[in-house]
Image 1 (tube, rainbow, N blue to C red):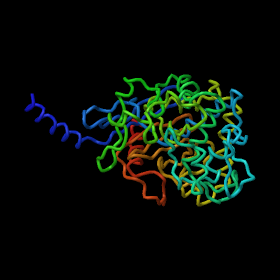
Image 2 (spheres, helix red, strand yellow):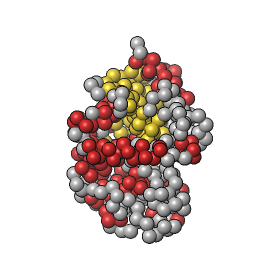
Image 3 (cartoon, rainbow, N blue to C red):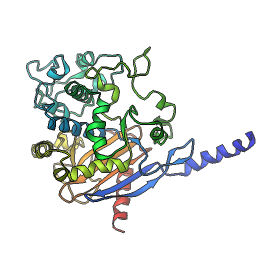
Image 4 (cartoon, helix red, strand yellow):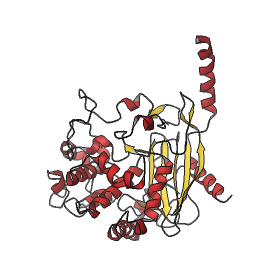
Length: 391
């Protein structure tokens, strides 16, 4: 038996090296969805091939799902996006540079509160969200909240998620399940907290471009939430409204591309299905329109053109600078980049079509956006998908 294993393992490793990076692209419209590309290994050690709906960490697309959760909670009458977020948090949140100006959920969702990630944005279980926001490095003086220059800051997401908990009395992972996943028939979770063992067994392991394991291999799944040193990895005593950073609201959703496409479909059909009320849908859309109408060249170059409430615009004409699709069509949604992964949920509300996708083993971004915010491998994946659509 030892000799057999000894001959199989090197063969498995060699086969894994020759496989393309795990990649999935699902196209959708208002009526249905179609997996176009499903290739690579979900886990190289086991040799398990990726499937179209295997759950993967989608990185910052999680912010779009967080915004939809907030809008749905607003539709329930439990949340006001323009209210001082301090009223929900139970402590006063203010920029040290503009202490008289309230910070709202709309400011946080649109990255215009004056926050910065220089202080870090992961607050482990057992540590204080309030203390993190008291650090001087958590803020920049780019203008008062609401008028502050756009600065993409992950630190705003734990604040939003914690405020949603406080407004509802529910844990953040339960809110996503009740307001987004369950109504759309989706099997997904955040930081694996509500996914069953069968779903966890289908996790897509993320690898860096060097081949190094980055996230979600079997060992990583043993404790997927950030925990302060000396504390047990359990949420049994967690109190909603205290520190939702433990759910990684900035990027911790695990979902398959078929299920992610269902979220895109829900947005294409929001008016007819009532997933969002007309008021909520208009608030969401106009947040992007109003921003792109006043877009500065600096914001467009940052790769987040027209950033509104957890969503932004992809277009390859001024003021936007993005050639992911290279067809002149405007799309809205959110992209993701982390741990060697690039991902996206993009749809055309007028045309009624969209794509949900991810690709792994992508080099980290250079930090310089010249012609596009997307990576060449990401562009090649979408080009292949669009060619398949025409067959």
